[in-house]
Length: 158
Image (cartoon, rainbow, N blue to C red; front, side):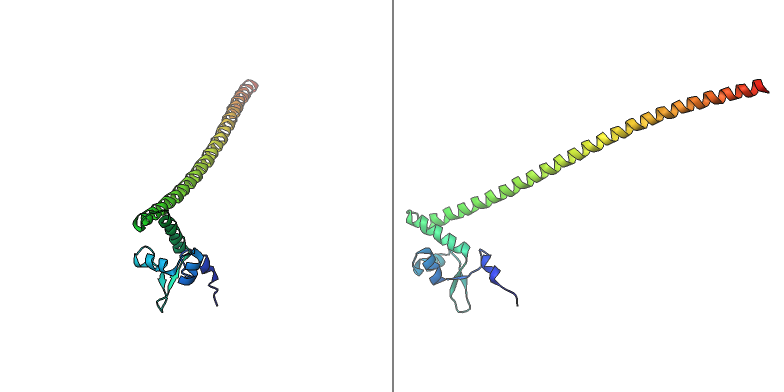
Protein backbone atom coordinates (compact mmCIF):
# COMPACT_ATOMS: atom_id res chain seq x y z
CA UNK A 1 0.00 0.00 0.00
CA UNK A 2 1.35 3.41 -0.96
CA UNK A 3 2.33 5.79 1.82
CA UNK A 4 0.59 9.18 1.53
CA UNK A 5 2.64 10.94 4.23
CA UNK A 6 4.63 12.78 1.59
CA UNK A 7 1.42 14.67 0.74
CA UNK A 8 1.95 16.56 4.00
CA UNK A 9 4.96 18.24 2.39
CA UNK A 10 2.68 19.71 -0.30
CA UNK A 11 1.88 23.33 0.63
CA UNK A 12 -1.51 22.99 -1.05
CA UNK A 13 -2.62 19.75 0.62
CA UNK A 14 -5.65 20.47 2.86
CA UNK A 15 -4.52 18.67 6.00
CA UNK A 16 -5.62 21.02 8.79
CA UNK A 17 -9.13 21.22 10.20
CA UNK A 18 -10.72 24.57 11.02
CA UNK A 19 -10.24 24.09 14.76
CA UNK A 20 -6.57 23.21 14.29
CA UNK A 21 -6.09 26.12 11.91
CA UNK A 22 -7.69 28.57 14.34
CA UNK A 23 -5.49 27.27 17.14
CA UNK A 24 -2.32 27.44 15.03
CA UNK A 25 -3.09 31.00 13.96
CA UNK A 26 -4.33 32.20 17.32
CA UNK A 27 -7.67 33.31 15.89
CA UNK A 28 -11.29 32.37 16.35
CA UNK A 29 -12.87 29.96 13.85
CA UNK A 30 -15.26 32.80 12.98
CA UNK A 31 -12.30 34.71 11.49
CA UNK A 32 -11.55 31.82 9.15
CA UNK A 33 -15.24 31.49 8.25
CA UNK A 34 -15.37 35.22 7.47
CA UNK A 35 -12.40 34.89 5.08
CA UNK A 36 -14.17 32.00 3.37
CA UNK A 37 -17.49 33.89 3.19
CA UNK A 38 -15.72 36.95 1.78
CA UNK A 39 -14.17 34.77 -0.95
CA UNK A 40 -10.64 35.61 0.19
CA UNK A 41 -9.79 32.09 1.30
CA UNK A 42 -11.14 28.95 -0.32
CA UNK A 43 -10.65 25.98 2.01
CA UNK A 44 -11.22 22.47 0.79
CA UNK A 45 -14.53 20.93 1.87
CA UNK A 46 -14.74 17.34 3.03
CA UNK A 47 -17.65 15.12 2.05
CA UNK A 48 -19.37 16.21 5.26
CA UNK A 49 -18.83 19.90 4.47
CA UNK A 50 -16.01 20.51 6.97
CA UNK A 51 -13.33 23.01 6.01
CA UNK A 52 -9.75 21.82 5.57
CA UNK A 53 -6.84 24.22 5.16
CA UNK A 54 -3.50 23.86 3.45
CA UNK A 55 -0.23 25.37 4.68
CA UNK A 56 -0.41 27.96 1.91
CA UNK A 57 -3.91 28.98 3.02
CA UNK A 58 -2.78 29.18 6.64
CA UNK A 59 0.11 31.46 5.64
CA UNK A 60 -2.30 33.70 3.73
CA UNK A 61 -4.77 33.80 6.65
CA UNK A 62 -1.91 34.69 8.99
CA UNK A 63 -0.68 37.50 6.73
CA UNK A 64 -4.24 38.83 6.35
CA UNK A 65 -4.65 38.83 10.13
CA UNK A 66 -1.42 40.87 10.48
CA UNK A 67 -2.58 43.39 7.91
CA UNK A 68 -6.03 43.67 9.47
CA UNK A 69 -4.41 44.19 12.88
CA UNK A 70 -2.35 47.00 11.31
CA UNK A 71 -5.59 48.77 10.39
CA UNK A 72 -6.06 47.73 6.76
CA UNK A 73 -9.46 46.86 5.41
CA UNK A 74 -9.99 43.32 4.18
CA UNK A 75 -9.93 44.55 0.57
CA UNK A 76 -6.61 46.38 0.99
CA UNK A 77 -5.15 43.48 3.01
CA UNK A 78 -6.12 41.10 0.23
CA UNK A 79 -4.58 43.41 -2.38
CA UNK A 80 -1.35 43.73 -0.37
CA UNK A 81 -1.11 39.97 0.13
CA UNK A 82 -1.76 39.40 -3.58
CA UNK A 83 0.92 41.92 -4.54
CA UNK A 84 3.37 40.31 -2.12
CA UNK A 85 2.68 36.91 -3.71
CA UNK A 86 3.20 38.37 -7.18
CA UNK A 87 6.45 39.96 -6.06
CA UNK A 88 7.66 36.63 -4.66
CA UNK A 89 6.70 34.91 -7.92
CA UNK A 90 8.53 37.59 -9.86
CA UNK A 91 11.60 37.25 -7.64
CA UNK A 92 11.60 33.47 -8.13
CA UNK A 93 11.22 33.88 -11.89
CA UNK A 94 14.08 36.39 -11.94
CA UNK A 95 16.25 34.00 -9.91
CA UNK A 96 15.47 31.19 -12.36
CA UNK A 97 16.25 33.50 -15.28
CA UNK A 98 19.52 34.58 -13.62
CA UNK A 99 20.48 30.95 -13.06
CA UNK A 100 19.62 30.09 -16.66
CA UNK A 101 21.70 33.07 -17.82
CA UNK A 102 24.65 31.93 -15.67
CA UNK A 103 24.35 28.42 -17.09
CA UNK A 104 24.18 29.81 -20.62
CA UNK A 105 27.22 32.00 -19.94
CA UNK A 106 29.11 28.99 -18.57
CA UNK A 107 28.12 26.92 -21.61
CA UNK A 108 29.19 29.76 -23.92
CA UNK A 109 32.53 30.04 -22.10
CA UNK A 110 33.09 26.27 -22.36
CA UNK A 111 32.20 26.37 -26.06
CA UNK A 112 34.55 29.31 -26.65
CA UNK A 113 37.32 27.46 -24.82
CA UNK A 114 36.67 24.31 -26.87
CA UNK A 115 36.67 26.39 -30.06
CA UNK A 116 39.94 28.05 -29.08
CA UNK A 117 41.44 24.64 -28.31
CA UNK A 118 40.21 23.24 -31.63
CA UNK A 119 41.64 26.22 -33.51
CA UNK A 120 44.99 25.83 -31.76
CA UNK A 121 45.01 22.12 -32.59
CA UNK A 122 44.10 22.91 -36.20
CA UNK A 123 46.88 25.51 -36.43
CA UNK A 124 49.39 22.99 -35.04
CA UNK A 125 48.26 20.40 -37.57
CA UNK A 126 48.45 22.97 -40.39
CA UNK A 127 52.02 23.84 -39.30
CA UNK A 128 52.89 20.15 -39.21
CA UNK A 129 51.38 19.70 -42.67
CA UNK A 130 53.42 22.65 -44.00
CA UNK A 131 56.60 21.16 -42.53
CA UNK A 132 55.78 17.76 -44.02
CA UNK A 133 55.07 19.33 -47.43
CA UNK A 134 58.38 21.17 -47.24
CA UNK A 135 60.14 17.90 -46.42
CA UNK A 136 58.38 16.22 -49.34
CA UNK A 137 59.38 19.06 -51.65
CA UNK A 138 62.99 18.70 -50.45
CA UNK A 139 62.81 14.94 -50.99
CA UNK A 140 61.38 15.45 -54.52
CA UNK A 141 64.19 17.86 -55.26
CA UNK A 142 66.77 15.33 -54.08
CA UNK A 143 65.09 12.57 -56.10
CA UNK A 144 65.09 14.77 -59.20
CA UNK A 145 68.76 15.60 -58.63
CA UNK A 146 69.67 11.93 -58.18
CA UNK A 147 67.56 10.92 -61.18
CA UNK A 148 69.28 13.55 -63.28
CA UNK A 149 72.69 12.35 -62.14
CA UNK A 150 71.77 8.75 -62.92
CA UNK A 151 70.67 9.72 -66.40
CA UNK A 152 73.92 11.60 -66.93
CA UNK A 153 75.93 8.65 -65.68
CA UNK A 154 73.95 6.28 -67.89
CA UNK A 155 74.53 8.47 -70.94
CA UNK A 156 78.20 9.00 -70.33
CA UNK A 157 78.84 5.45 -69.18
CA UNK A 158 77.24 3.75 -72.18
